[in-house]
Length: 184
Image (tube, rainbow, N blue to C red; front, side, top):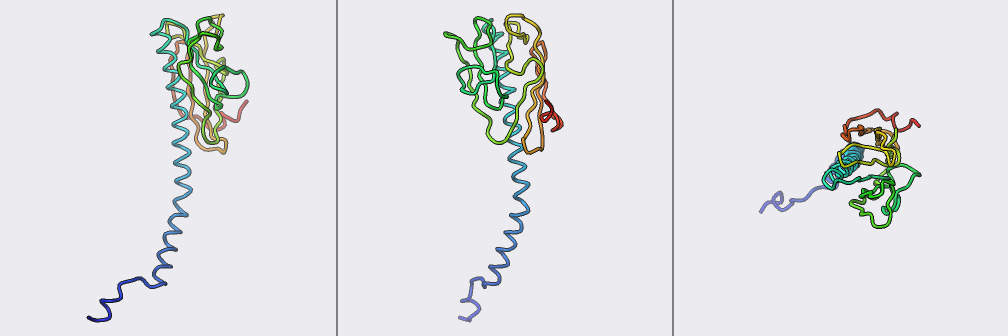
């Protein structure tokens, strides 16, 4: 056999060039990958809130009872401090108090959002959204129409998403400028 057939490996120089090319390509792809992951988290988080709000409305209609989604740090009780990124719960509000009381059933618990996100509720949906048996969004006890905006943003800037709650209980979804989370 000839010597050319026995030498089937790479030289050290070929290996170093290959490693250098792979390192350069990985360095170029890393920022794009981070942006992709952040954008997917953003979509996932806003989808979770949208799903919870739609579930609360549907449960209120089906159960013919008031159902509330409220921000919750411990996933057991409602809170009026902080923003919605700390998590939220959906529960049947039998006494129209917009807080979980003894005997009221918690239907869903959503833990704090992963990553660096701000989720703010504006208007009169800052602390909770309460749906009546007709599917309308109404404030506790007073039955005043409830409506407002939820803005979800990355704390480091980037994309943002928005959910608008109408007094009818319907929701709209869209993209919003990042400035919407830094205001107020």
